[in-house]
Length: 364
Image (tube, rainbow, N blue to C red; front, side):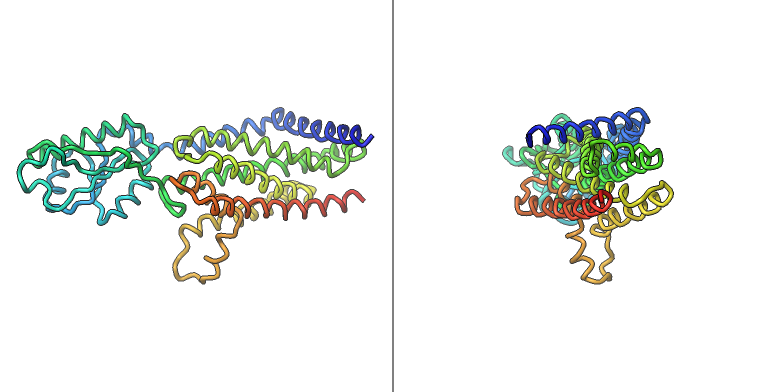
């Protein structure tokens, strides 16, 4: 009997989930949002694409030789030279690069002693996501330009010299992680309460509640529908940025758990408000509260109180952002990964507990 009752409840939950997904498709909400997601991501990819259209090779150089070498390379015009002051600076430039480039370390005395040892080669580095053919092409151009300057053949070695970002890196990795957090969060927070309030205004939610469905089952059904929206948005984003993801298990776990948090917040909004006008005001405020800490963790002025920098790492969207950043790194710490994912999951559970309390009151 209990098994039959459980199957009936599952059938009701899946029916509500299916209804919400069909409604989102019929109202073209989901399709519109997917198009919006694709456009936002495409804009983020515009700069790398424009850089690819440029015929000028981009090369970062840490130069320990005579400064005239850089001056001559720039005067030649065969490649765009970005000089950095240290090996760490070279790594940062490559880790945060938006387009194809390589970074070369030129040792002291290079080009001053006539012919080079045949076994000698300059060490060069590249962003981990670059295509091998592009790396080989930039390597060839740099060898040609340097050979022309020093008057002898120059060999460049890039074998195994991929550069990965760190969790606190900026540039392209930061923008990628920020876009994923923004879209994953916004999709669920906007669609889930929108459909709930729409049903309240049309009184279809009342009809559901006088049916065999309980309020808890209605909420679970809508949560599953919201998870579908969040994962659909996450899939679109990941397809665009798949070359940057190294550790897929972290990225997928962050996408799923992050969607759960956003769904919980969306359910909270949908449960608290009965009309769109009031809900939209609080939704905008909620999104600011969620996204602002991600920007602060990267750009917070040093004169701000230390307590803020101590609190920010525990903020769920900051943990979500750092989870995606961790998926781009070479060797992520499992403790860090599970720590970030745990913060997001714990936050989702707290919000869902609050939603359950609201639901129980509605069920009385």
